[in-house]
Length: 452
Ligand SMILES: C[S@@+](CC[C@H](N)C(=O)[O-])C[C@H]1O[C@@H](n2cnc3c(N)ncnc32)[C@H](O)[C@@H]1O
Image 1: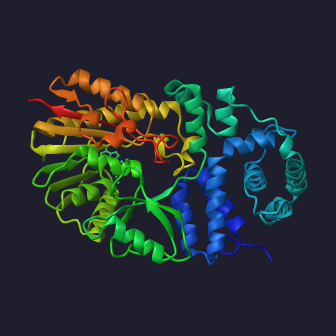
Image 2: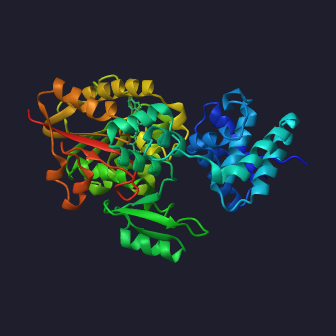
Image 3: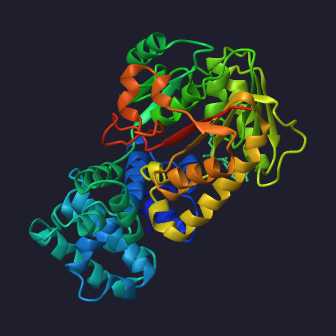
């Protein structure tokens, strides 16, 4: 009998990878498939591992397959290549899957999916890979470009980006870190509980967790137990990366102030600002997409945030309904290439390009220019994003300062805790990196103060 995505983890993974190749987002399809599936917890874990693993390590997997495949991979039928990648990922990366199972299930899947003519070929390539995988001549770190591309699984344009940004040894460390799965972290909702209490609840429920190194309300889940995490329905936490948590602190919002969050959905930072100001600051949260505005409202309700007004607005248009010089603090957490969160959206390393980055930098510049007139004299504007590309970060900052002499770049080191010092650059902007900073995502932040 033929398997279905509902009862076979590999079939489910194949179907999800197919949808991602067609342009869908991996996390959304994975969520839909797992919600309706009858698979048990272990098999669900395997589906997630296969989908994220194949997408994240596609560059490495393809390098290995090329050694054992007589024809170039790009000449293969897409269905056959997808099956080979799925099988090869298991052979190369998953010790717990026996080799005969990785090969056998790939061959069987080819038959079920209507490719009986390819079964011999798939069997041959995967068996050769299994026999020869220890002898593969992987590029060495001294050849940094090839190492990033084939070992760290990066497209060529991204290897260039890393090499422009960092010296070789660090580019290597960042490349290696981005090829690993992202940590699972939570922001404790201090409107309802505190970190010590949530850590205790997590331990009681059988989860291994620890405090984050920098964010005072951050928790890392080191090993999940069997059941769900306690406190979700009660709004005791928000799933959020540690680097993202730092942004609300950098905004330095105070109770009684008026605050604008320009690109706010799903609301992770908006609700954090509400918590840091103890629900005593008026927060306006703008977002371009109406269905995402709802996410801000739902999150605010769950977390008990009371002073947030969420509104649909495309900030490429100046928001005339907001008065000039009327906000003490503005956060522009801009839409970006997401290079700093590649681990969480592994398909984006294959769907983005250097061209997209240029377009994104233009959009970010436009959004920043439209937010600036709303800042009060003496007020602050924080520009943040989960990317490390020069164009989106220093490039946008330089253009902004050039066109806005009434704003100055602040040195974030002067107002932040001294044990955050390593997060900042010479210019006083923030650049976090997973390989340097306790595995947090790669973020950038620059804060401007308005003189008049
Ligand atoms: C990086 S995300 C923001 C994440 C959010 N600050 C948080 O912490 O949860 C960027 C957001 O900007 C929104 N966006 C994109 N273009 C926009 C525009 N022109 N105007 C307003 N929002 C926009 C996206 O839909 C997305 O929700």
